Image 1: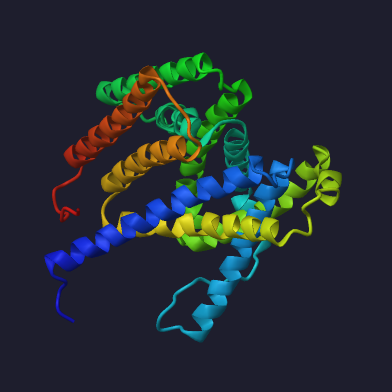
Image 2: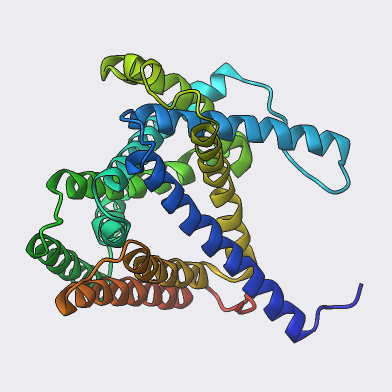
Amino acid sequence: MADKTLVQRYVHVLTVVACYWFVSITLVFVNKSLLSGSEKLEAPLFVTCYQCVVTVAACYAIRAAARSFPDRISFPSLELDMNIMKQVLPLSIVFVGMITFNNLCLKNVGISFYYIGRSLTTVFNVLMTYFILGQKTSLSAIGCCGLILGGFYLGVDQEDASGSFSLSGTIYGVLASLFVSLFSIYVKKLLPVVDGNIWALTFYNNVNACVLFLPLMVMFGEIPIVFNFQFLTSINFWFMMTIGGIFGFAIGYVTGLQIQATSPLTHNISGTAKAAAQTVLATHWFMETKSSLWWLSNMVVLGGSLAYARVRQLEMKTNTPDRTVNKV
């Protein structure tokens, strides 16, 4: 087959980026609806657990499709290995913390503030890389983190000034950011356990998460809340729950696809730009009015994040022999 033309390559890249934006933004709005919409269920652990169940089911469905169409679909074997489950357990504990605090943050803050509330992931990446991996960070990268911290503080201040600040939601956002940084470290550490296959790791991780959520739901009294939920038999409720689970599974795929079609730097830039678009969309969708300083806080965080991505790219380029082909 002939090589793709430049136009075809750009169309492919734009299509992949558009899919990433669509899946990511839709997932946030669907979860927000489930957690604080008209048919909200006051059981965030159950909602999160169900999405893990959907992910496991999706893995089995794709594996079945791979058996039927081996020439078109490739997917690893999904035979449960108790030894692998035990080895993946530390990652699963971090994963449960990550998605739980993420959804609790989304439940307690507006989507427009969600990006600011979850903006400290980069800062925690630097801290965890130093304290866990012992790797130092350049002054330029630390300066970018300082910008992000400044934007976060200004955003919190302006959210408080507008009367919509949620202390619990912000704390959950900070904890979610911490667990996201820990999750990336544990993923790199445990990928060799499943021979580097990210889908096998996703499967085992979500199976473990389903088990871990059960005692947590009992501990926090969510079981009777679920059984007494007035919309428990609502088709719309379960449709939204399932859509949330499917999009939760899909985000992992489109993230990998975007990195493959572009580059890690472009993926970070796309994610940052997506967050900006998501913030603007949320303010219009929910008819929110924000101050100039509030918007400035978003711009500072976005600028700090973009600058950090660029600094890290330049550092990697300096430390890596120039034998790769630049991607879009």
